[in-house]
Length: 309
Image (cartoon, rainbow, N blue to C red; front, side, top):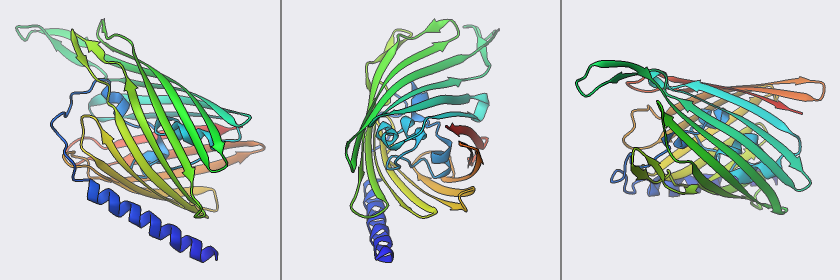
């Protein structure tokens, strides 16, 4: 019977991927680059990055706070995680997140930051004026709850701040909404999220919408193996398909791989990742690494460390 469940789950998962591929050809670039707070489009979850950026259907994980807050509902122990990575042209990004389970609810808090590094400045005559930087912050407060034994919902309220040199944009506020459903097929969960639903950001007397995005995906977990797939549409970007997988060896070391299918980007599409668990008494320490290669730009390396109490 268990083998039959595994086969059924695999069939459903592959069918979902087929639907995703057929939808990938939607329109794309009429609004490219028009959204503000672009740093919100880059997920900081390192485990997810190693699996192609797919995470919407994953249950019971702190990092779901960035992509589908409903996934927090399955946590039963407090967790803290910090992430960091340096992107091309010295852009640095990272986060700090906390989850506190409480009764049938879970409270989550997260701080996401991004810094451009030094940028050369010039006046109207192209004379150097020194360097400056651009900084972005988002503070998120999340609440997730199990509505039924197989259904969880979550919501995040985010406050967004952006600053370039001495000029700051107006504060932005947005909502993330998410749901997670555990199907009757053992190990198969489905999720959806709507992110960055909020006010326009005004910068230099120009207003732009936040990068509103919709994500739907699935995760199939059986033993040491996890398979994931997300279909993502961001307001000013093409529809993209994210695929990935993970395998744990004796619950100590994980190997991850994925593919990010999006037209028009110079990423190779491939992603790779590693994970390691270290148990000390009642504490679990988890370390994750992700590698995202690019064709013409510098490759990206991401790191995270988590403590589960």
